[in-house]
Length: 154
Image 1 (tube, one colour):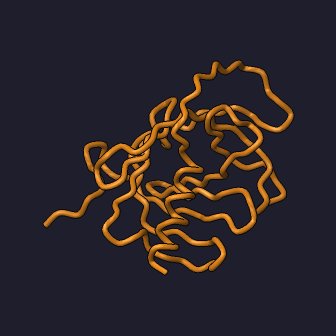
Image 2 (cartoon, one colour; image 1 turned 135 degrees about the vertical axis):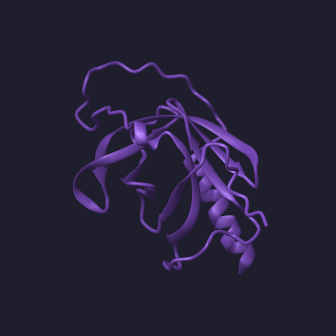
C-alpha cells in the first residue's frame, strides 16, 4: 500500500513538472480560454504538507522520509525531493475553466501546453494546486524560506 501511494505521488509530481523544458515566448494577446497574468507571490519555495484525492479520495501526508518542495522562479517550476533537484519545467500563469468550478480560475500551464492546466489557490503563505481531471489530487503547500530545503533537522 505504501508503495502504491508513493507511486501515485511520484506520478502526480511528474505530471506537474515534467522533465522537458520548452522555451516559450509570450505575447500580450488574450486567448479565449486563458488570460495571462503574473502572480509575484507565487515565486519562492513551497513545501508539500498534505495531499488528497485520487482513487482513495482521502487526505494524507506526503510519503514518509520524503521532503517535497516546489520552487517557482519567474519562468520555471523546480521540483526538489529530499534536497535534490529532480525536475525543472517552464510554466505560464493564466485563467481557465476548472472542472471544480463554473467560473474562470487561476491556472498553471506547464511546458507551453495551454490545453491542460492545474488550478491553484494562494492565500498568504498557503498554496493549493488541483489537478484538473477526475480522481486528480489536490496538493497543499506552505511557503518556506528560500534557503530552506524542506528537510527536518534536529
